[in-house]
Length: 259
Image 1 (tube, helix red, strand yellow):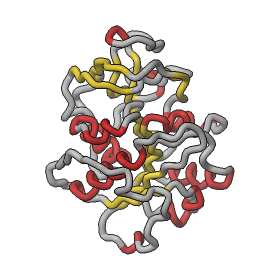
Image 2: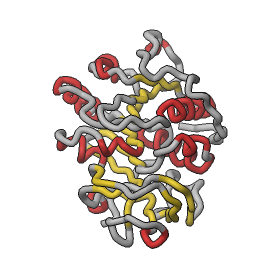
Image 3: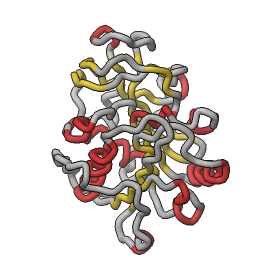
């Protein structure tokens, strides 16, 4: 699919700029643009950055040719509804957000070629659902205090990382995971544990990755805790590339795991 050059916009957002609890418009099926669903339900820690993150993704859509619906309503997970979307973004979700029937719907959606994007605490979600853990790649374990650290691009050959510097210094909440996803996913970024305190994953601490999974595509970044992340051009480029990959809006796929 030919695409115009990607445009990134630095976004300043008031917390009242969007209502993420509202159901998406019923007219979505008539759109000419491809659409994604941004799902924001929380049943644990609630990130105050959710409104800023929604607004940022909507801006990315406006400038890159896709429509965005945002909702915290799990009743949208029906076969007919999710089929309208090229990808579903679990944005800062926490806890048990889908019931058994909705889980079956979402799994079927992925098996039929749908896309998944997980942002930050998407890995702090649905611990009792093993399939979801495999989709994300790993479950969250813990994190140290928010601090500055250095991120390195693990694979610089992909469109997903082409716009990122080889060495990227930024502040975030750096997750440790219950298991190392590296054998099962293609790691895009690692965080250097020597540049901050509290990392427990070792020298090649994965912080973003992708993989083709169970018929669909999955992309995850552990970054994106604070509202400020969603006005960082580099982070927005990172997030945009994940959306484009998962939704198949660009042809580049995800290679096999490095390990």
